[in-house]
Length: 123
Image (cartoon, rainbow, N blue to C red; front, top):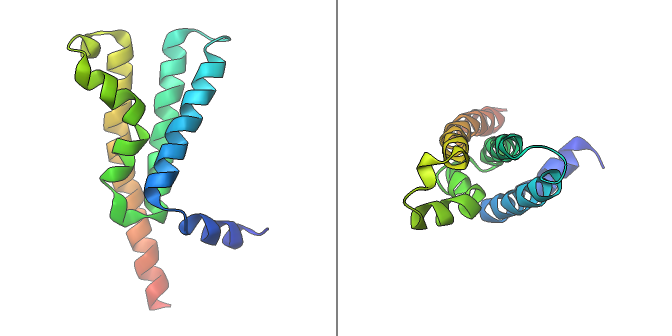
């Protein structure tokens, strides 16, 4: 399979499905890495994986810029909403920074995606 063929197949997958798959993939990777590296580093890896996923998904689906970072971080946002002391822990600070970075990355990806779609429409 060539690159364009793969990209076209991924383009047909809805943004919500890609976001949830990214969240589940990150959870599995962090679960495996948790046995081998220290806990704060796994939180950083989790955040970076979701930032990259938000960026890439929003390049493909720029119109879904607000829902992608929320669904990518759904496994963290729900527990954080229920726990008042979440944001004062090291986990909360690292993950909160990751959520903010994924929002920024999603917007940057959407800008690039809109530019590519607009550029492709002209040609």
